[in-house]
Each structure stands twice: as structure tokens, then as C-alpha cells.
Image (cartoon, rainbow, N blue to C red):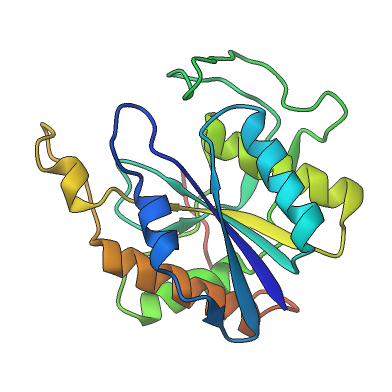
Length: 215
């Protein structure tokens, strides 16, 4: 079995992206999965095109995209992607769409097809904080998650897909005021490997545990 693991290049003025740094460290064999890695541009449109091309060429069983969520304490598998781009900042090519649909013929939202609750529990089992997230934002992370799930729904319904956000790493917050939440790079790597192992173990369905929030 093959798992396509993607991560964005640095954006927003940062010299590094913890998603990309962690993905580079992830083992290339986890459970039944051969892990195929892909660096993705933090650019509207081109990010989806890059992953869609990789899906076509590698024919994976799973697509797991990783992105940075500065300000979060936990590793957060995402539940849903919405059909909107509303960029607070410009992407790496200066694009800043506001209230634009990602695909005119797409659903208002697509839900992940990954076992996100099992992924959260697996990350916690290696003593790292994790939680289900109910919003992937409206920047390139949500854009890519939506684009991947749209592509899978239209062309590859047998392939599972989803997105996970990771916190800053220490190098990114040392000079920030106030200091933002962060996680050690190797801990992010361990968390992602635990999450991938959970996808393998629970490939046929998620576990039945509470993962909701009041707001």
C-alpha cells in the first residue's frame, strides 16, 4: 500500500515550515504503507495541481497533507474543508483571493475520509497533545484539503484523503512577542508517524469516541 504525504514550503515570512521539516524526517515505511513524500508550493491553484499530478502518477491508497497552524498547541487532524478561499495574507506568488469558490462545481464542503479520531488517540498514546479540528481555515491549507477531497470524490473515490495541521517549532517562536505555542520537531515527527500507523490500523473505519467541541 502507498501513502502520499505532502507538506508546504515556508510562507508568510517564515524561513522554515515545520510541516515540511517533519515530513522529511518521517519514516518511509510505516505499517503496510510505503510513504511517498511531496513538497507543495504554498500557492493557490498550483498546490492542488501539484498534488493531483502526484496522485495520478503514484496511485496511492491514502493522501495525507500536512500544514502549519501557528497558534495551535496540538497536532490537529482536520474534519472538513470548505469551498471558499478568503486569504488574510498573500500566498507565495502574491495571490490573495477573497471570498472565492475553489471549484464552482464542488460541494459546499467535503469531509475527510481518514480515521481522524483514531489518529488523535494514537498521537496522544505517544504522549503528545492532539485534537480533532473542525476548521482548516480559509488559506492554502483549506484550499488544498478541499482540492484533494474534490479530486478524490470526482476521479478516485477509492482513495482516502485528509489534512493535518502541526504547531510551530521552537526556532519560529524564539523571537516572537508574545511567544506562540510550539512543539519540538522530533515530537511532530513522532506524532505524524503515530497518526499514519493509526490510518493503517483503522483503514476500514474510525473509532467511536467523542471528538467534538462546544465552539
